Image 1 (cartoon, rainbow, N blue to C red):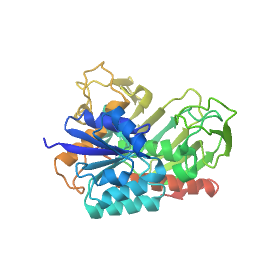
Image 2: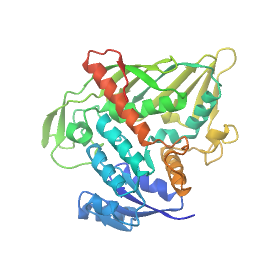
Image 3: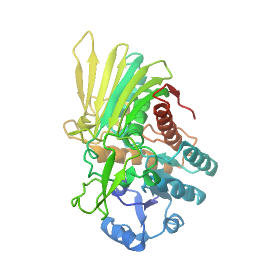
Image 4: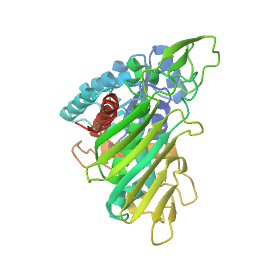
Length: 387
């Protein structure tokens, strides 16, 4: 197979996972890393085993050996980095959000479509084997007609007022926190698995921690300030907790809550889809099980076992039953779908593998979050999702 060169812009929290995932494919070369300076990029390149380093992302984009640009930068850089990669004719894999606003996301989708490049957004939970099993089973009618879709995505990494991240600064992270960061994941997963589209939302949002202590010294994004004497008090402008009612295009109703201030919940994403005959529930923190509920017979708990799964789910499982697969395996499955599409020489208009989310999906996520914020600002009223 012809080898493909990737370049990573932004090697912070999630960037190294991009590298780990593509290396597992076997035919992708990690050509270069771009950072905020020559020194930081060189240090990351040495640490992660990249051949080259650049202190300017434009130099990486124009490296002839880089065929695919991975954008893992802070949110405010998603638009300029991705736009520059598209202008250079490079395929792009972007972390979500695709951009800070629906207008920016729509422009990136238009630019990518015109350029004819392959474009992807890393909604990584699509890559879990039992997610794909559930998606195919629901499409086949195994639970009947879906009429209620609900769940939550709860974390506790912002529970303390000493917890801080660039994600909480509007000029870097955007105007939303919980809804944009984790609510977008829940919505993409719900629509993907149920095979439905959210058409209207009613959102109630709040800021539980109104003032936070920003450390003046640099630190890990997910660590609390160790020295509270050297902090700056920062009033919060974004939500850290929200609940949303949703309506789907088939008439189904739904609801979900997101929170980054829920003690004990580390990465607790739960999706349940209730149909006219059965229910399916998937929980990210127990991702190797799928609960299937019935009225007239015993409920089931399907283990992630290729011999027991349907063809759609089996293709995303790489180990026998009883051998647990996890977050990084799902992330690799997403990259496998993206790079397999590129390696096959397919056009962006061709049918994509199911775990492959495109800029169109990223744009829709921006529109969903925007509608939720507008709903809350108007006093929590039903608001149409406009694209």
